[in-house]
Length: 352
Ligand code: TYM
Image (cartoon, rainbow, N blue to C red; front, side, top):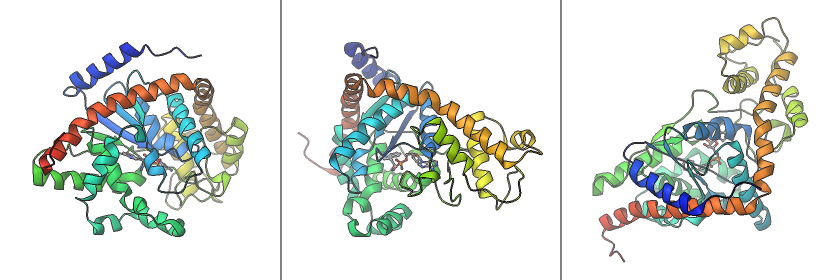
């Protein structure tokens, strides 16, 4: 059993933190979809940074379950994925005593502001989103309105908290740009209602590629299981996936154009060990790809070992997790309501 949160203290301290420290510490917001097991790409591109930002910033994180239903979900599996993702993110090191970490659908301001922002977002700009084009091609039988307006819900997520910074992988850059445009447009009409957020895209790990086709992003929806490492893969499976990773025929560990497979493995290794590409090249000089792949596999196994162990503890204590997401959502609701009310008042709604 995990130590239960002292709920009075938790709420009181968190409220105070949000109220008093807003001026002092910058606000960070980010979210992840609970659409299946979390991948090494999610971890290196986003979640590892979320963990590292917790002391320096006021961090607010969410499971973007409303975004997930833009693709049809099987109810029991969806429910399980949400709880699994919550446990996994806690296991990565998100500390609910330091950061808010809630489930998006528990905070109703998100859907409300998303509707408002829909009315300030143009059809043309949403049509240009590459993720919309990709996903509608992939799910041609279900090109729903939610898939199209997905970026306005993301903008609402971010703008509700007056976030300064949004740590994401490179694939979310375009969504961050549209969020900034929406905020600018709204502010231009009504004065300073929203903080215009800055993307925080890491220099390394921002785009972890498939181990089977290193020209493609590593993705949980990849049909080839060897393409993607997940946080819950066993050490044996992780090692097998790295040993099978597609490389080239040069047998020289060097970061260079055209060596997508090796570049990707070097990026992963560098992200985990903190070594520069030059140091990695020196370490593997004269050695073959076999040695290098084993070293990358071992580094990933050791990085993820404590995550898997902590996941087992959290998933066994649903009461603790429920307390964490409920308390976090209560505070997020209160905080985000201020921005929503401000925006609606400016538009001219009669406030309750
Ligand atoms: P999602 O769930 O697809 O991914 C979560 C985070 O992981 C990053 N990521 C990667 N980074 C590096 N390499 C990869 N192969 C890789 N795959 C995924 C993503 O960039 C992301 O940071 N729409 C978002 C969730 C969201 C959100 C938000 C994010 C909803 N509201 C507001 C930021 C702010 C998404 O689907 O992420």
